[in-house]
Length: 183
Length: 183
Image (cartoon, rainbow over all chains, first blue to last red; front, side, top):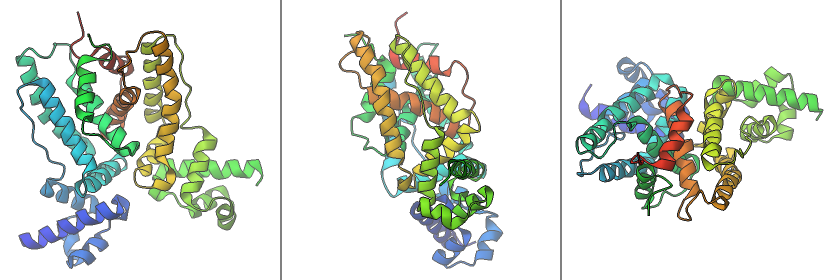
């Protein structure tokens, strides 16, 4: 398929999922909006889940850069900031929230692999921190990321509340220093 | 409407949402399964969101008891355990996850009010802890609950991973004591 045609199909897919959610996404709708025949689309992507998966990978809307600020605190704040932007800044956030919420019920969207791939890259932050002596051997990086990324999801998506500019700093401070921080 | 009839309608609603998700829930499907005429159902609940909302309230599937164990740590572990059970133990978890994921895209399900009501009750745990001198004045109860409840959502629902028996204890220890805990 010509790259320009493919880009039009992917654009239409992402716009539709942002507007209507995963259940409102149909290959018919993508065909109509992109001007490409439905049977052509099905020849390349056997289901709407496959089509959305390909569009997400291509668009890099779920992509992120692993930060390397020189400190565990700085890196974690940057990671949380990235999750905050992903889940709150349209139009990307409409796509991300719709796709991730749909992945809960549609295993073919492979949400688990997305989160596993992401964590495999986030590990670098913890490995560097351990080498710098910033992380005790007992620390559990997966639990730390569950708390931090989960807090953004909870605040922004489930509570539907504004996530302030200082959210990342405060959430990271709580996890690194605890409620009973000294001083 | 006779209480028994209403109970059959609510049961059918919750079974359908657990099996098919929110988008697979239809008033037609509820009518068929409960043996009650569709127009009768619409006379009482004007939309499937209203019907599901009423069924959830009635069933108490999202209900919880505010713990009072005598310590902040004990209360938080009990709260996290409650969220873990809500999100992982079928059949309730199928209903809860489907309804909460749907609330992200369907404001008429009023997910925000659910979370606000829940937090209003969770506050009691923090007020008692403050009176016992267990919580510094700078502590942010909403952020603490976002981290803890978000971590369960992240681990169980988004990552689709098993949430171990010690998850609640470890998550609460991390938030209360921090990564850099003494000792």
